[in-house]
Image (cartoon, rainbow, N blue to C red; front, top):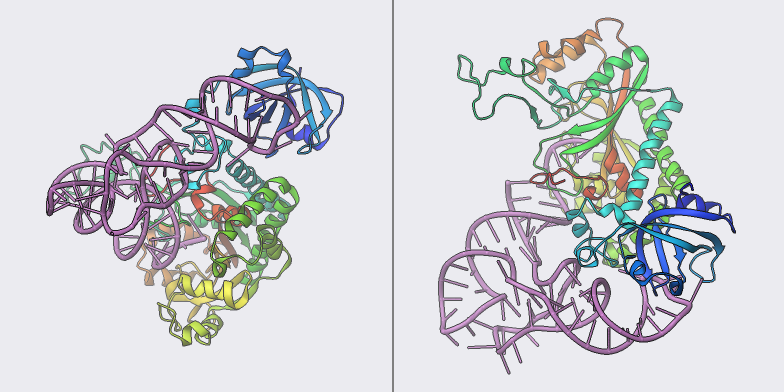
Amino acid sequence: MKREKIAAILNAPKIGEKVLVKGWVRSFRANRFISINDGSTINNIQAVVEFENFDESLLKRITTASSVAVIGELVESQGKGQAVEIKVESVEIIGDANPDDVQKTVMQPKKHSLEFLREQAHLRFRTNTVGAVFRIRHAVSYAIHKFFNDEGCYYLHTPIITASDAEGAGETFHVTNLDMENLPKNEEGNINFKEDFFGKKVNLTVSGQLEAELAALALGQVYTFGPTFRAENSNTSRHLAEFWMIEPEVAFNDLKDNMDLTERFLKYIGKYILDNCKDDLQFLNDRDAKEQQSKPQNQRNELSLIERIQFVVENDFKRLTYTEAIEVLRNSKPFKKKKFKFPVEWGVDLHSEHERYLVEKEFKCPVILTDYPAEIKAFYMRQNDDGKTVAAMDVLFPGIGEIVGGSQREERMDVLKKKIADFNIEEEELWWYLDTRKFGTVPHAGFGLGFERMVMFVTGMANIRDVIPFPRTPQNAEF
RNA sequence: UCUCCCUUAGCUCAGUUGGUUAGAGCAUCUGACUGUUAAUCAGAGGGUCCAAGGUUCGAGUCCUUGAGGGAGAGCCA
């Protein structure tokens, strides 16, 4: 007999048919009702056993977390909590679960803190919340590939091991197979990387952007979607040492095209999740609502999770330049009352408190800030005609902060070479990058999206560690 | 890396001014019941009070240091 997924049965119940279901027991109530989940949906199916007709020793083994195979007729439920249920003809225990051991895990049938769940990352997939999060994480991932495929972008695999850290995006993890106990030294007494596997010092990638640019200047439009590694000692709910990043790069696009692409992209993901993850989203929505209730009134979100996603899908993002943002901030109440801890004047980078004010208080919608001072942005961003600013953009989301960072790239060889010199980068290291400006250079633009931050937004999770299966953070690489 | 907060039963937490044998809810176990919805009722078991040191007649409670976790900041996606 062929196993049927619970999602399929619940979506289109065929009353009267005999079905085989395999899954894990969530609860066994009144010695009669087995709640079974197989991961295909957040919903359980209820299997009803006439305990009078079954061996007591078999029923004893139907415990929370055990795995079972159940065969029976699909019937309309007599109870109220569900439309259909399985009238059990046979039960097979596939794998036992000792209740005394289960009691110590996140699978015991009760409410747990997310911190406790995190300590059992290997088992937390069995919970409703984490299960919903990872089904949605998959859907976001799929939506991204679908969006770019429909846009005509090619999925490009940029290297994970690279010698390039010229972007200065962050501290890198070194990759070596040298004997750490006995490092080879050169004549100056430094480590001799010529003896290392690649014959040079290499690290895990902090960004695939520079490589993506090379491909975009031939294939027209590409995107990367891969792991990214930063060895920064960041201890926040928004940072990981290993995270996933999406970096589209499009030839002939200017900054405005780039903003349009970003906005279309983010709205597409939101809409896809609203349309395709209803049950999981509803569960997380209700969970979020309860969470909001326990917070003090002034920290509560005015909108529910679903409303927040709808808002992003339906409303235009607010676009303004860095210079305009400085003006808005200098005219704001907190600035006049000296509530900001960091100074607000043209030329300084904006801090969290400023970004949050703009997004959460002033405009109350996603904000795209553009045209930042050249000094506070990376070397590859295109210099504007004013000579002071570059064609950069940051997309700020309520509650998440910076979710996208991007720019139009500097395509003019002379300007780019000068910037590289100004930033004290060795020109020889980037010869391959500069070559693209030598042979038919064109304007182009792209951006980077923090995948986990997007998943946080559509699931309502407040800590980034709860939206990646096995989080890597300072002092933590368990599992 | 900095600031603040937390660490007591399997989990979530209470524990008064430093004072007898450290409590509750849920979970687990045993029994009863059986169309339940995180079933219900009765009972039972379950503690290195994060670690080390100190103050004190006496420390879960006060002090010091350390470890782990959380929130915020910096950095960023």
